Image (tube, rainbow, N blue to C red; front, side, top):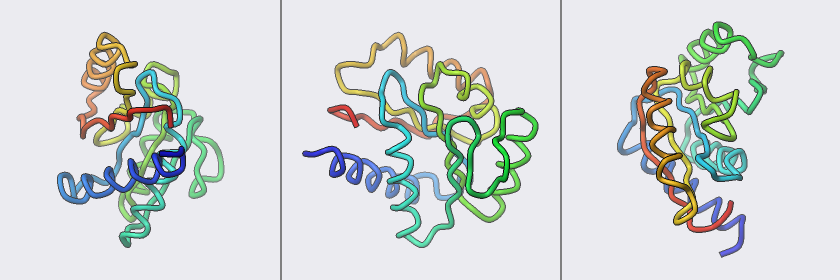
Length: 151
């Protein structure tokens, strides 16, 4: 499959899973574990959720969002903005790598996380560290997206 098809398929599957398994979740973090392309997957997830009639707010790496005039770099501001947006939207925050500097504040500000991992490439130790980091910051794990190729 080509890259756009892989992204669209993964986003559609994730959209269905979110609506069926965790329909009450209002904010989540989509983050990679040794897997590039997370931001593109988040954009496709936003499209899929909007197609399903959901209002979606996307918070990109560095705290950038169409709904917030300035980047959300401060943890308190990030939490407040996510809480406010979650009142009317499903908030999807994006951290390119769960071990990166954006991920910590976002993990502490959302209800759940979805980890994006590459089949047979992501090291199991990295996945364990990612799960531990989320739990230590009080973030529940919604699930994982396993991709067979780079997205």
